[in-house]
Image 1 (cartoon, rainbow, N blue to C red):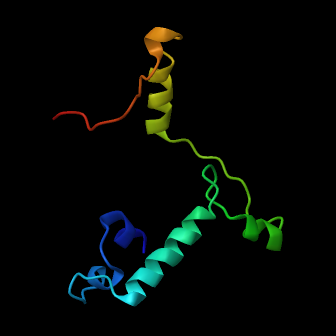
Image 2 (cartoon, rainbow, N blue to C red):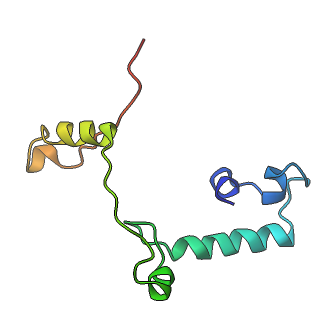
Length: 96
């Protein structure tokens, strides 16, 4: 469903069937997936229901992303105040 949502196509079309029209089943799947995604915490991606069922449903783990590290280092170079407002730092592949 995530791919169908991303590409805005019916699930049946993604799976290689259908005419490209949204069937009742496709619409039901899309609505259920949207409802599921609304339940996810924007920060950690878990659902409250998971924690209610098991307070220890997850364990924290640490990892370092070199890309995020580079973005944060570059962000440190952006001036504070009016000159730095709205500045976004992104990554692109290095030109060959």
